[in-house]
Structure formats: structure tokens, C-alpha cells
Image (cartoon, rainbow, N blue to C red; front, top):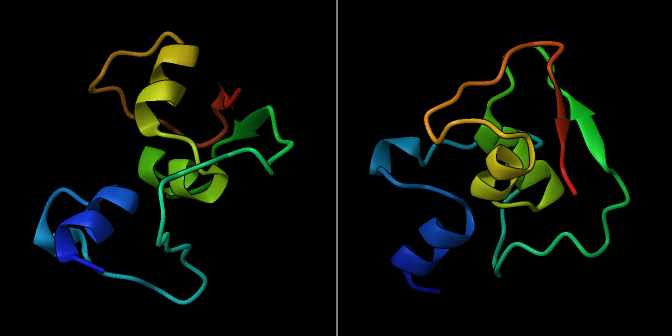
Length: 84
């Protein structure tokens, strides 16, 4: 797999974002949330929009749009986000 494609699938924009931890989800194909039943998610401590997007296989842009948030919006602990 080419580096650029891997970065695209895992929502990585900069090489310094290529840090993975135990339990992280890594995609080897395009995001597809067909198997997820979750419709909303409460943001946990330290969780980022990227973390949520990868966990539920939903593009961050779709989460922002679904929740009426600005492109540069940040999520905070306890905030409830609609995923589908």
C-alpha cells in the first residue's frame, strides 16, 4: 500500500500525526460505517474528532456537518455528537 493512500484512509495530514498507540484503529481501505449501529456518541476525556471518526468509520467532515459545527470546531468531553 502506498504511503499517501494509507494517510488518506487514516485521516493523517502530516507525518508527525503518524503516531499510533495500543488499541488504535488503523484502516487499510476507505472508511465505511455500514456495520456500525451507533447513531450518536458522547465525547470522552481527551478524545478528538479524528479519534471518533476513525472509531466509527465516519469522515470528520460528515460529523461536523451532521452536528452543524464549523470546519475548525473542536469537541469537548461530554459533548454528544450525531454520527448518522
